[in-house]
Image (tube, rainbow, N blue to C red; front, side, top):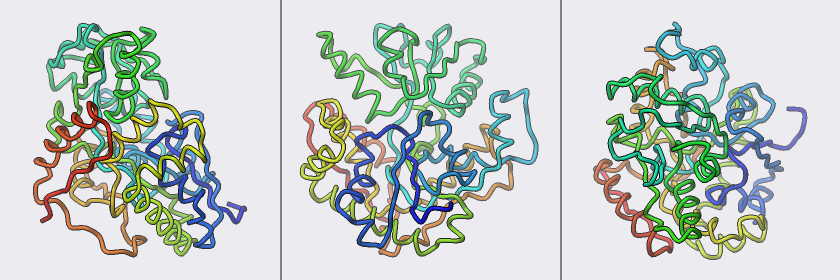
Amino acid sequence: MSTDKITFLTNWHATPYHAPLYLAQSKGFFKDEGLKVALLEPNDPSDVTEIIGSGKVDMGFKAMIHTLAVLPPAEDNQDDHPNSVQAKARNFPVTSIGSLLDEPFTGVVYLKDSGITEDFRSLKGKRIGYVGEFGKIQIDELTKYYGMTADDYTAVRCGMNVTKAIINGTIDAGIGLENVQMVELAEWLATQNRPRTDVQMLRIDQLAELGCCCFCSILYIANDAFIAANPEKIGKFMNAVKRATDFVLANPEKAYEEYVDMKPIMGTAVNRKIFERSFAYFSRDLKNVQRDWNKVTNYGKRLGILDAEFVPNYTNKFLSWTLEKDSADPLGDQRRMAELQQHVAVEGGFHRLEAASA
């Protein structure tokens, strides 16, 4: 890039879980590190990896599965995954340099009156919305697992509008996050005098027996050439967002107020609830978790978007602080997190799960 600024592209329009990034800017943490950072938002979240990988933007946010699936496997199996051909041909050089959100629950979100049940096969004949191409690949793979085919449902690409598409009836269900789309739909249900609990989710990690929701962990990623040319800038950037994350975790009420001051669009009841539901997922130490990367790498190979020799593209070398030990009971943490989030959905507030240290 010709500018002396770091350009950073978010994975979505400004959303409550972006708070550490925007607060690092508004509180002067980037300035304290001697950095100028331009924060950008995409028109289409599917374009983010391509834009960063091509070097048009230096850094950004992206889910782990999308960060992995930017390098092509050795061979292409068009019969198995016709929609993955484009991704396999991309070869965009990006690396994850840290984590924003750890394992937010992700799955097929639907309303109880849709005719969909906890049985995945109830999706047969339904219209399923997805954000980007890998969402369709995931559903296609699950149809095989449950004795169906990709022709048994209708895929509808919705971009950022999964919630809206469910509300207006364009789709029967869509891939979404527990801390975003489920919140938006629950609050809409309340305006219709319907129970908030009428919004349900078929979690992809449970359907696919992955043992984690790490494929949708939200990461800080950067263009490889930018990393190679600017290692000091990368380290300073991560110092600033770590400082902002610490502030969010220590003072969530004040952090949210300051975020609203910077981004007035955040000042709605729905966004407040999304922030509360995102609080438990914020990574405290920002590290890339090796166990999660191994699981998602294997999942990517299973989906046919990674070859057998693929080496996960992440590093923790720009995190200068002491990193926390990995959990000794990650599956137990998932169960406890589900219980915690159910409590937050009903009672609100800011609550976090203390992982079982190894």
